[in-house]
Image (cartoon, rainbow, N blue to C red; front, side):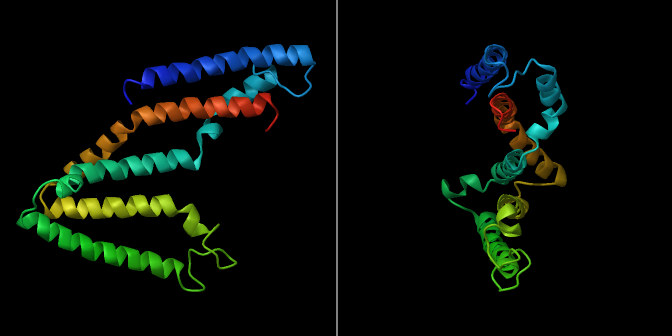
Length: 198
């Protein structure tokens, strides 16, 4: 990914520059019918005034949450447990993990399975509902809880500082994806503006 990142980033930036110039030419030749220019006052207001709003998508939050979960998982040592023999501490940690997982799945089931469960929609369905909107955060939170518990029992985490450091390393590993997210979203939103989908 690190080798491809500069090329993907450059391709997205170049595509956006081409779109800006093409939108100006298309709006000038079509007389404003069917396309809008990003260089017009409306386009500049849309792009600069709405830039933060363009980035505020659930995908960004999912990316952040999953990267935190991945960092905790890697730092806890649970990723390598299948590749090497486990010792006494790891067996204890795995037993605790099984108990926590059962409790966590049970709590989520109680919030979703009964007919009038809290996370169901008003019509009693899972999709769309509060559960479907919160599925990625539920999974990420579960992975974080399981990873922290495993890491503490297996002694991969010695302190709260170790937990925070592993979570931030997860964010650091997702930094290339965050850059691509910003560039891809601004290109997508610019396309929507130019071809009057917003």
